[in-house]
Image (cartoon, rainbow, N blue to C red):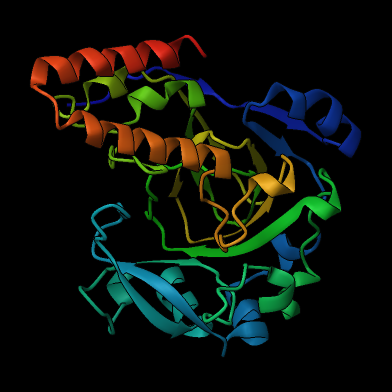
Length: 314
């Protein structure tokens, strides 16, 4: 059944400066599509040939799936290691030309760069992992430099759609090559997203199963199409889902918008819930286990009492 969600366009701003972002856009705590921001020479330089010349022999760990709808919950993908020149070849060429594959002809690939030292689980930083590309991209100085957390280099096959999830840090998604559709949902719609951890169980947001996920139809969807050179500001806790319309190259920049001590230090991806929030969620899990020892009518009564306590805090 086709989704009945209404769609609102993401607000778009042109020629944004640091002052206009910090004073006018950022305080709204809403997604914003930014156009005309100087991101350096990457949009003209980062051709397939240039990427292969500069970093082609670097090995990267890649998501490989027979489905364009990659699902982290069910793990419908494999992790495979490829040199970047081979990844670029497979993602930028028509699928009909693909002769070598892991799963099926026409399979889909997605790279989310990681730190090189897997033992210490390094945080992704394009300046460290891809220094020969880092000088080409100019990251807007829209946040305090001391708050910087990571810069993630991404490559995706046309059609790849990532699972809907939220991050606990603010971020800028910089689209360098190709077009991308980004759909977003407010943190206020958390009860409509059918969450497992930070991820939504609603895999196909365009054709959701209305019997399994009826509340999802009540969620307000925001959407934009990103062109090469565009940036989207995604505030922390906003759910987002990205669909690569073309062979795409992008860079995500995350920063800690709250006090440093609130974030888990053992979190190379920057997606663990804030320490106080994680403790509270664990307490809720423990509370429900205690309630499972009671008769059903007692259990339901005390769950309602817990809900009343939580609702009083909203």
